[in-house]
Amino acid sequence: MRYRSSVRGQSYVFADLTELLAKASEEKSGDLLAGLAAGSAVERVAAQRALADVRLADFVAAPLLDDAVTALALDRHDRDGFAGIAALTVGELRELILGPGFPAAWGQGLHRALLPEMAAAVAKIMSDKDLIVGAAPLRVVTRCRNTMGAAGTFGVRVQPNHPTDDVAGILVSVLDGLLFGCGDAMLGVNPARDSVTGTADILHALHDLLEHLGLPTQTCVLAHISTQLAALRTGAPVDLLFQSIAGTEAANDSFGVSIAQLSDGRDEVLDHHRSRAGEFVGEQVMYFETGQGSALSAEAHHGIDQLTCEARAQGVARAFDPFLVNSVVGFIGPEYLANARQITRAGLEDHFIGKLLGLPMGVDICYTNHVDADANTNDDLLVLLTAAGCNFVMGVPSSDDVMLSYQSTSYHDAAGVRELFRLGPAPEFGAWMHERGVLHAGRLAGGDARLHATLEAGALRALGTAVSLAAS
Image 1: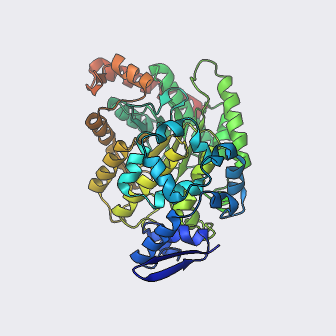
Image 2: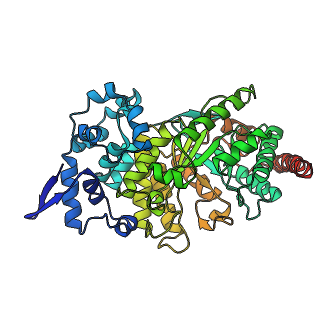
Image 3: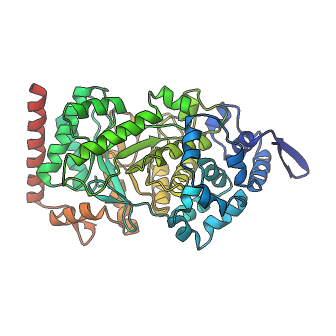
């Protein structure tokens, strides 16, 4: 089906919905690289005007791609709920989202009636402010060892990466984060090596630290899903099962992962949790990472623009009831998001789409060292996403990840926006922090010598366990 629009007396024709979606996107270097972007700002406006008139029913009638990702989304689609909004246009959906009654309807399950492509389409005709206003009231609460996402909270993942996976170095970084009140989202380590033994050692050390401190948070080692499951089968404690995912079956194939593998892995971790009676308050066990440009970088985008591919990846995440989802927004590089303006736009889009689809959405606000961005532009996006109700961000020592070699948000950055917006950590984690003097009346207090001694003792005992495991 062709779509037509006129701007300033110039007529534009878009061959199909895939082309229309691509040319309606705000400028991204990845779409330019792929030859999908609008040729001018005027053509972009024409595409956005035409897209605003597309009925939501068209997205069901004419899927962009016939693959496992599409099949999963259609299989989980709430057709009964969709019947009430099928006749709406994308423009009318935007007005609905920005209206005062939408959060209540969304909370009653309307998000399950939206396909990922619909969410991508409406984001393309929204301003940055619209994306913030639309996302802010949509709260997604999840539970594992603690409760994330409630109103008034703002989570932080402690990311204590180490270039050689040295357990002592990882634990020191964790303690640094705890003293800033960070870590309620999780203690999540990106390993330098995808090793079953190394993954198991880190998992054991982190779990031992949690046990000795009585710390109500969850741990994760971001190895490949198959590596984590192999570590679990050796006896390693897996709280959250991680996997990077993308928006097409071919892109997920390039990651070495399938829908069936995600489903089987989730079931295995749930069984593992049930064998650890009393450790968990909820059964949401998956942690996913996404990011605009991943399908294009794998040459597996099938002519679909990177924002729409990102929405489809989030559709995959939604099917597995995750504890957390994280868009690593500037990590892939300038070939896909060239500068701070594009990174800011992508971060707001990814967060809004995730929330609209019902996901517990966080953002790794980051950039690589060869992109046109800096610490100030990272701060700008951090403030915007906090205003938008983002569930969590990263806490990286000094904001400089020494293993992945990119720039993110630091422990003190996260503490600063919590203070600015009067937000706190997850309630169970916050209570633990108050008991130990890190927080006082909801604000960072810095603790005292006894707190430092307690944390240090817990870390040393965890390190001793890790050394014993390695020796055996």
